[in-house]
Image 1 (cartoon, rainbow, N blue to C red):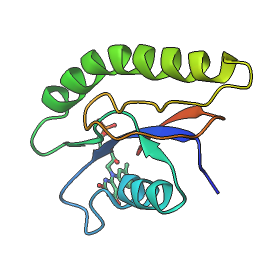
Image 2: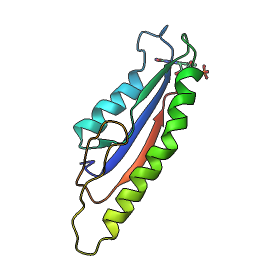
Image 3: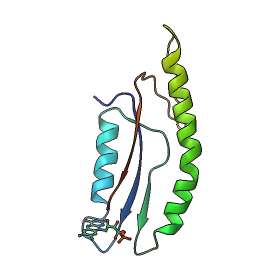
Image 4: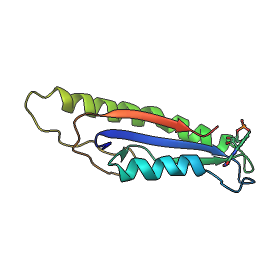
Amino acid sequence: MLAGLHYTVLGLGDSNYTRFMYVPRAFKTRFAELGGVCFYDCAEADEVEGLEEVVDVWVAGLWDALKMVLSKTSAAGGAAGGTNDGVHDAVGGVTSNNKDTHTHIIQQE
Ligand SMILES: Cc1cc2nc3c(=O)[nH]c(=O)nc-3n(C[C@H](O)[C@H](O)[C@H](O)COP(=O)(O)O)c2cc1C
């Protein structure tokens, strides 16, 4: 159903809560179940540990991952009659053969 959706998730949570990271974990699970492709490592920042250590590193790496996935998906989409030769996951090396791609970033507030 979400074939072609490229996603990553940064969860901002607090491990004092019983349902720590419930929302970002639910999104991650569901995106994967529906055929989405994680293009950049998902991360979880815990208020108790300090958010910045995780958030700053994650954001710093995000832009190159976005450039990579967007350039590969637009190049693949522009090939007349050609096949999409796959979008390489910026971190994990996961590939996708989906043509119609979208990128969504989810944060838990
Ligand atoms: C009303 C409220 C409910 C929250 N519920 C959760 C939760 O269920 N699980 C979780 O991991 N964090 C929860 N949080 C923490 C937030 O997700 C928030 O990301 C975290 O505290 C860091 O953001 P801050 O710097 O704005 O506080 C909650 C925060 C508030 C204010």
